[in-house]
Image 1 (cartoon, rainbow, N blue to C red):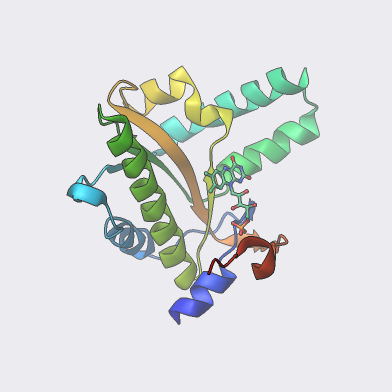
Image 2: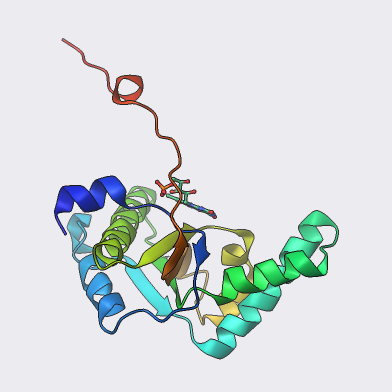
Length: 184
Ligand SMILES: Cc1cc2nc3c(=O)[nH]c(=O)nc-3n(C[C@H](O)[C@H](O)[C@H](O)COP(=O)(O)O)c2cc1C
């Protein structure tokens, strides 16, 4: 796929089928991710590929958190959540190694964000959908424990849900003249 085509047409996918991802696609996307720019070559990104049993625990946690937030959920909504968390073929947590220096930490966040975008664009070019999520599950103590991430060492920047798109949305964007200005 042409680079411009990928840049202009990648969309966040919220609804996935339960189809598998073609072999090698996630590995190619990870290779693209780790080629993102990073100041001082800190390589601040870490990727945790979440296996079946941990995924199951996260699904239950996600349902529990949603029920707490809404003061309860009905069976239909619970089923919707099970598909939301269960359908995407892969879940990958991206975390950032936390530097002691606040400026370096900010730059490392930017680099990690660039890595995530590389990852999502590579997937898109291979016909695979993704979603960057920062829902409350990504910040929960249990999530850190199950993913074996020490919050004093790394911070989870994203859950990346990856799979075959069921629906491709097209949210509105601001126009260029709303966001670009010129100075003499
Ligand atoms: C830092 C960051 C956090 C995000 N967190 C969420 C999230 O928690 N849930 C969600 O549905 N989408 C999340 N998104 C995706 C955005 O909602 C999405 O990019 C936006 O709606 C524009 O859609 P597009 O990616 O298709 O252009 C996140 C995106 C970014 C950059």
